[in-house]
Image 1: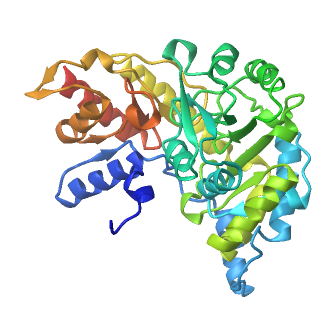
Image 2: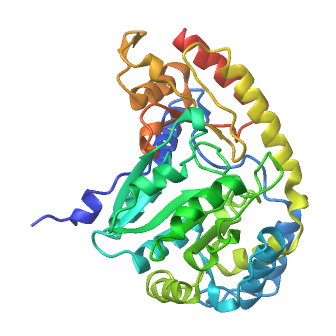
Length: 394
């Protein structure tokens, strides 16, 4: 009898976390590694949020929290959804969790039965597929192209639907591609989904505010989609609060109550101090963090400008998040400094070992022809990193 379950043996290790760990090991050996692998803003959490956390400590918030979050935080989430997304939720429809990742896990565990299919437009965030699998669902990958800005079309969605399709999961702005679905594109997908009343959508909007085209559209806003959509969000990216671990969802009440039920058996309520700080974060105008978004746009333009000068890299222009997802398949089959490049994983490891730049293989995101480069790093680091990459592949 095996010591470990088949469930954990068959689960992939998060590629982003694995690359970050490998980069840390090389740094510990004295190597000058530039990390462009993690999806983590390099800004500090804004002072007005930190002050709210300090106040909560001084007010002796230290007890267990309600499983689904403080009522005041849930109300702040409701206010945010109405203000930013034109979505109206009630308290029982909101669940606060230990990061948006737990929200995703909760939804998978309460909605998927063995064999249920979940459509994943590729590329998708690394954990979607394994979360679906651990809930005994079946990921159905839909390939997109850089020419279409890595966005799934209505025709592709229609072709992927089978009698076993239960859900579609996607992010906009997208991790890893930075793609942003327009209202027209979401409406086209909704035309298909309205014909299938039993298919639900997980709309991961964690990068909502890191948007360079001046307008985010939520799937739940689209006509006929509110009752079929679970909207996932959190404070990690826009507020530079990755380590605070607070995510939240808005969903049809029966789904939210089920998520509350499973969370009560697995983790219970999220951190009390972090929750109090997030009340302040969400009640403030998003304009308080606009300085970060402005800087990310400058960095995006810098990365694209530099990569356009590197032979073998094909890029599009991402409209949000803080990633570029270049196609590097022109290097496949070639030998660089004595190392054969067979795939994106080989290429990503080559860049780490030869250029001392950490990226992430596109294979982890369901696209074997690309790598993900995070520009959540200083402009000086970006310039040096792309310079090293150019030298390593020339």
